[in-house]
Amino acid sequence: MGLNRLHATAVALIAATTLAGCGGPGSDASRTAPQVAPTPRPASIPGAGLGTPVQGDAQVLGMLAAFEQNEIDLARQALDRHLGGDAENFARGMLQDHERALADVQQHSPAESEQSAALRARGQARVASVGLEEDINAYRNAFLKAAAADYSDALKLMDAQWLPVAQGEQTRAYLAGVRKRLAHAYERAQAVVSTR
Image (cartoon, rainbow, N blue to C red; front, side, top):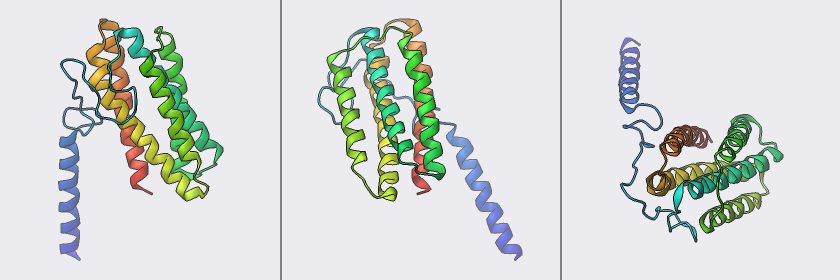
């Protein structure tokens, strides 16, 4: 019994030390650490119209507004399915976060562009695809994977295009704050996916 307890304590200590060294979401040691390109470049995500970087702060904010609306649509669909448990709590929090974020980004005068329209269409297609799942467990898994993929893609766009294109100091500071929020959301989505 003593050896088992000693072994469990050692494992817990190693895990705590490892996690402490990783930092939180978005920290330099985390898997969501910023990797901002020195100049805008195509983001490594699939999707027609998303490869060409946007021009200027207003178009960057237009892309962010399109992303926020896509996540609102996905969360509303998930809540309509009454998932229960952690997935429903995640969807509820997701809806609140993105409704607040969309209202906030709209205060910064976003502009639509060809790229933001493509991102919006891509999000609508993903919501439609997830919605095809009729079995509640299959839907729950598809929803959580779609949310995690959306956050991952947004972080890639942020680092490859949005931050490098942003010119105003206020816009850059605003986007840096958004990036931290998205990194936390991505980590939450991954945690819920891993419990499924």
